[in-house]
Image (cartoon, rainbow, N blue to C red; front, side, top):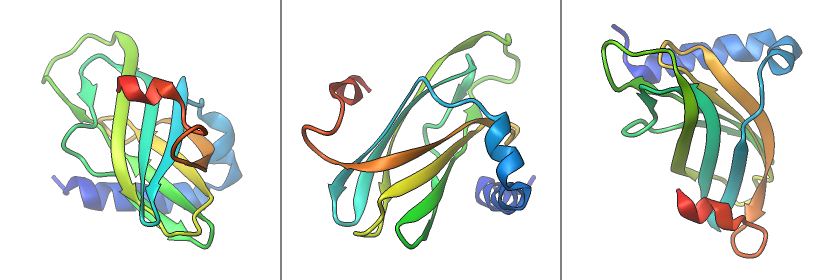
Length: 138
């Protein structure tokens, strides 16, 4: 089985090729926020509807920066071999690397079989008053 990094990279290339059709088919997130920590990093906080047996814990997001924007892919993994298909809110709280001039990110969460769960374009906020207090509950 290919490593998650290779599979994420392969998906990212496919997603880029799919273009705008990809963007129109995926739901957004219940909550998403990117809050700058310093010039080179930010906190990525997401709440999305996903499987009850999936998590992003232990997996690092793939970040591809280009000018003032970039793509972020957050992979998930199964927490059990057999699982009911119950959908629940899933929480992602990751620190990601950013360039000082990054202003906007196109974020995609991938399910355990690397199918897209959701996608949304979000601005990079300055930490502090611009960032939601909801992120503190992660």
